[in-house]
Image (tube, rainbow, N blue to C red; front, side, top):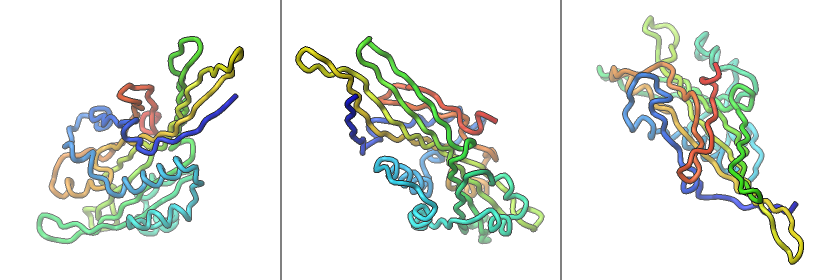
Length: 252
């Protein structure tokens, strides 16, 4: 079988993310901007996209170096437990990388508040989901989509009201899909024909609300859910939905 590889570098043109506002936010209506403002999430997504499109191995050290630009520090479960105490327990799981940062916000009374945040990328079965989707066929040609979807998490904290330790005020996420799009057909050479498959590597990103900053609306006393994770992500190709992949919240 002849195989031709080519890459889609401008993936936003080919794969577009549906925001899925009603699917991921329960009954709460969030402002449109809450789905768009995620500079740290963009850095993580850009790293994942670049390594996938260039077939570069992902290592803890390469992630440490790249995400340091976003102010993130690769850390351990022990270090997070020392900082956050018992509220760190829901963050932990198998085959996960933890990235920690602290941001300073001003409360309505002008007081400065330090807010820890933890971002989680994992390759275990609870944060990475695979789906093989076969498209329509006319008998001689057909398409297939080999999808690998990562559920990237964020946990955001504020000092607890009792003045001791921290409390998690928001659990959000984004779905990062790696799609290998295959076009299967036949190549004719005179009196004979050979099967031929061309491959395109594509990426797809869909964010839940307030992935980076849920602290600002909380301090402004706006209504948000503590768990805003997506239940699923719809993978859309050229404006056409090719499949839906449940995420960790949709499998709990």
